[in-house]
Image (cartoon, rainbow, N blue to C red; front, top):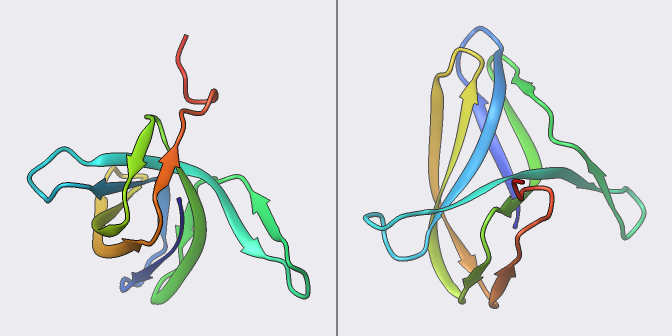
Length: 123
């Protein structure tokens, strides 16, 4: 699942981020959410019909600025998500273990299937 996500740091200090995850609520807020973890950053290559992909590493939110990323997320489970509107939460955690959460709604226009990545399987 690819999302463009933005954060506004309203403080006077940079905020170093060590973790990011997305939770999708398929059946309402009182049900168990589906968890997605960052796979890669991606951006359009100017002048071409291609995407440039880079690994997701810890990053810093600059002070008094809005910081935006396009990130592709992956689930650790096999999922079938039918078309519809869904609540998602984006949670970031800084290096002092403070968590910041932003909730929004997304619309899935066609059925999405996710498969377990071999990178995520544990031995």
